[in-house]
Image 1 (tube, rainbow, N blue to C red):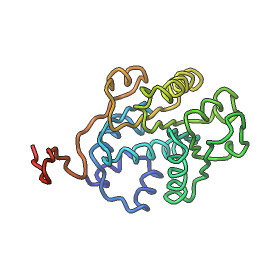
Image 2 (cartoon, rainbow, N blue to C red; image 1 turned 90 degrees about the vertical axis):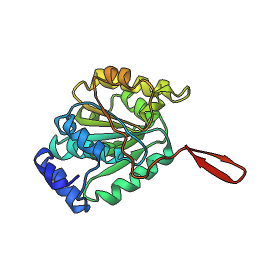
Image 3 (cartoon, rainbow, N blue to C red; image 1 turned 180 degrees about the horizontal axis):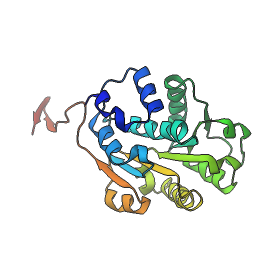
Amino acid sequence: MNLAKHKSKIPEKVYDLLERRGFTELRPCQIKSIDAGLFEDKNLLVCTPTASGKTLVGELAALNGILHDRGKAVYIVPLRALASEKFRQFRKDYPNLKVAMSTGDLDEVEGNLGHSDVIIVTSEKFDSLLRHRVEWLKRVKTVVVDEIHLLNDPSRGPTLEIVLTILKRVLPHAQIVGLSATIGNKEDLAAWLNAELVEDSWRPVKLEKGVYLNGKIEFV
């Protein structure tokens, strides 16, 4: 879907960044997210297949919070390795933004985070920052939660649930964007987040099912 056709729905500074990165097309879930209120600060729960474009939806929400709403964006990931990967990606794709990562000592409150535009954290670290009531939290406009289906995970789920519960209370006007490839109770979760549910089945590579037996695959 042609990017230029949706220019009127995208804040100018965000659109300019997309053009600079070489985007000419948007994927279905990205269009649906824009139509659902991505740039109107509405909470979204985006449930679409792997590689369908969810990551860019999260990035667009973060960019909007920074460039249009003049605030900060927090990007929550479940693992330190994913935090490092996301940190490198943001630094590469958006060199003019101040990007920070915080995944270390849960009792340490790094002062440099207050000078950053994008702060990438694990849910455990963000839980600590919320409990320490760090000064810069009041400037957070957007919170992106990657792999939000891990709310159902017995080890990580409770912390993420607490984080989102506290977040909704202390930052009621912050936009929350949850991303997930698979989630069972998406309607209930969207209602709990007070979010618009964005669903789509498009994927870049067709998914086929088959049965492997005696060196052969029979597709069904």
